Amino acid sequence: MTPSLEAPEPVEDVLANPLKQKPQLVAPEPEHCPGPESEQAGTADSCAGCPNQKICASAPKGPDPDIPLITSRLAGVKHKVLVLSGKGGVGKSTLTSQLAQALATNPEMTVGVMDTDICGPSIPKMLGVEAETIHVSASGWSPVWAMDNLAVMSIQFMLPNRDDAIIWRGPKKNGLIKQFLKDVEWGEMDFLLVDTPPGTSDEHLSVNTFLKGSGIEGAVVVTTPQEVSLLDVRKEIDFCRKAGIRILGLVENMSLFVCPKCTHATEIFRATTGGGRALAEEMGIPFLGSVPLDPRLGMACDFGESFFDSFPDSPACVALKGVVKGMAEQIGLDPEKVVPEG
Image 1: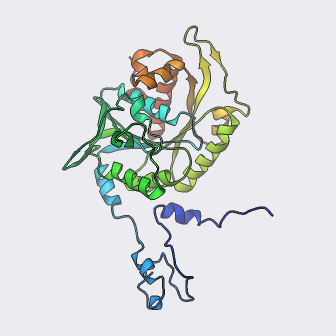
Image 2: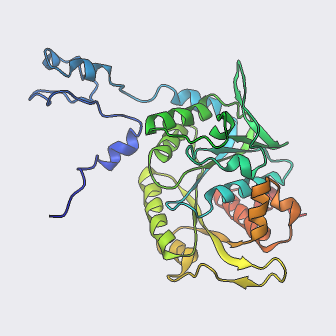
Image 3: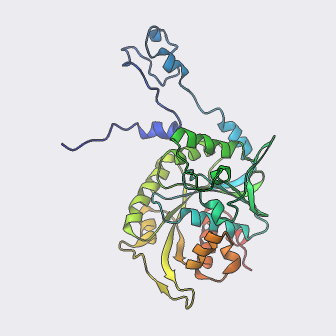
């Protein structure tokens, strides 16, 4: 007999109340139970004498009271963009760091990066601020500034040892993400890019819920050309649609290998089903561009250096600027003003 999954919670309920934990009842619900997650749980007349009464009465109810505080804290951030992918290893964090650096090449822009990949934080390393720590004042946490106009917040800054594993369950991850939004002094910013882990689980639901009040511009979805990656990215696109997150566009990363000597392009990860461009057409979403695989980009991330300063004319650099311009156009900004040439 084929095993079956436990009956899932309704998608609408999960999306509307992603942080709600179902109470762990010690006895079956009686016949006239108002429901362990209802507003009357534990207080209704029918709850008298029920073994679950105290459990139901103490369960959190209603919207999160911190959401208005988050909305107020982020009032100065003009555009909030999520970077998503259903697949791990496609280069979300690399793309996030490079999009941030591309935006920061404009001295009139102020950019923030929030690393919500709690168990695998790599943004600080890529931006050259891995050894920094967070300064805490009466007004909140100060983000770490990688450049004069590029701020970063990550759990990596809070670890006693950079190699320490973060072994946390969902609620604790959600709590830290809330702190990154509620307690960090982001100040006046043009863009806040949110790097996420792969999948469609706790971190994604939390970020979407916490940012709903202050407004999310949308999501940039990342894939590589292979069908194995596209398979999971389709699920991520479905998540965005169900969660009401606008998809600003799809980026195909590692589309080609560009030889740094002769700039000849080789298709290492073959697009057996048409790659990212075909998927974007199939799903009816914008295609923001293809970013080639350049070993110099990997080295720049390893050393925390700006790829745009070192190799401004490389095919990968040109492609990344094209992605930023496409994203800006989807948001309704003038691409040439966001990333000016020269």
